[in-house]
Length: 475
Image 1 (cartoon, helix red, strand yellow):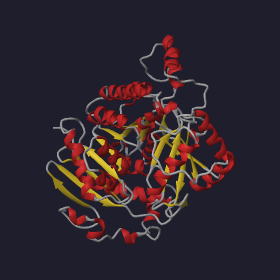
Image 2 (image 1 turned 135 degrees about the horizontal axis):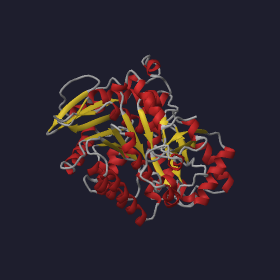
Image 3 (image 1 turned 30 degrees about the vertical axis):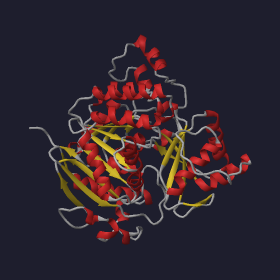
């Protein structure tokens, strides 16, 4: 049985390591991920539909409405081994997909959602964690028992100090689309494939995944207002926000309302509390532009991968098309990525944004303003270890044996990693260099020989890096 916030706060006070722990508040998406081998799913699903794929060609689309859309978009991402995520706008079609794989395909149900995965990692690390969301009966068994949910029941029984009057509580819940009797476990379909997999005449160059959802509850961020009313009681030291990418499947006017609501809530947060924003895959360029222009200025830290940084470059026309395609690679040129990170930091140099954590398959980079952040070398190293151990399913102690990793790629040459494009301050595995007012820290990722999971790795890297980074205290 989950403890109340008051009970957990008392337990934290008793913890001898309380001084070294932080209090993280995370919003706004949590769900159940159904992991399915992509090729097994498609072979059976196509047979059930009696659908021919011979004339279909890879094509990217902003949303998925039917089986043809699904196949073309999947093929587009599969041929480049690119991570992808799309919203299925037709709820009946999504229900048809989920009913089929649950009944016919081998699958694994795991905790999902950017905020949910990061909250779980933080709680596992001993931090006190508040997560915006409602845990249904199955999700509650998957997430760490110490994660605190601002459940709607707590409003009704006045377990916490809230600004809502009893007579207004039912109306407030109804306005926010929250039904206490509903099973709130939302399912996202994770189609995973391995390097060298073949599909419709295409060969995948790397292991990756493609995500499908029809999750309007998380897309509309139903728990956002509830979450922000909990913050004064919870008193977080750090805040992490994510999940807005799920709004990609909403109508344009609803996406704009969502971004404005997101921005408004960020502006209510105490400016002394560091805020990290984890970006994720968005197809609509107008939505990308709105997120960048309205969200980035109000967060201190940003987590982003190769697909997302390339999408920003394309939306704002910051690079030529050939350079943007290079950014989407599993091992994008370091100099090009750093240039793009610098462009983002320059664009928002008079705002709160002062730190970016870029992550891809082969390495990750932290770029930050020198006078604001510290401990970045520890953060980039910790993120690298977390990535490898989570992908392989090992503990850190087991990982240090290194026989489980393809470490020959870790001991790089200057040419293979193109490290000679940058004038480093040091040599070795972890490196750093200065560029104007920014300092960049780089670390390679030890590739796992037999990865058991590709989804959520970016979240693991970013939250581990943010957890180990600290803003310098003002005098």
